Image 1 (cartoon, rainbow, N blue to C red):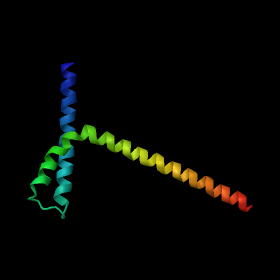
Image 2 (cartoon, rainbow, N blue to C red; image 1 turned 60 degrees about the vertical axis):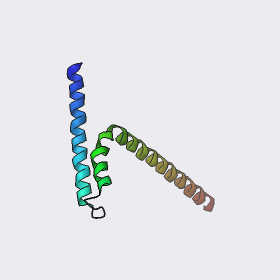
Image 3 (tube, rainbow, N blue to C red; image 1 turned 135 degrees about the vertical axis):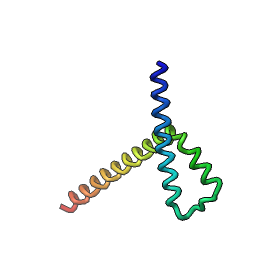
Image 4 (cartoon, rainbow, N blue to C red; image 1 turned 30 degrees about the vertical axis):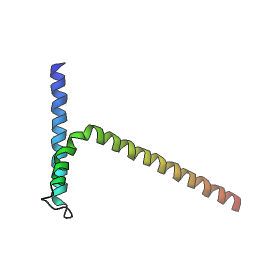
Length: 88
């Protein structure tokens, strides 16, 4: 059990490091935010530690939007078919 916990912690830290580097890269390429803005640096340092919460929530949100879009497209096709059948 201890070895498994160490592996989970290791994976968590590796993913956190990857996300931190990605956020830092995006921040560094962003020309709209000054590089001496303290709040921006704090967010860059703190935000990646919450990836286990943020990423699943983001995936759930994208999934809901995709489902809603598919329903709207299906509804639109049904309306178009109904209009076409009335016209025939």
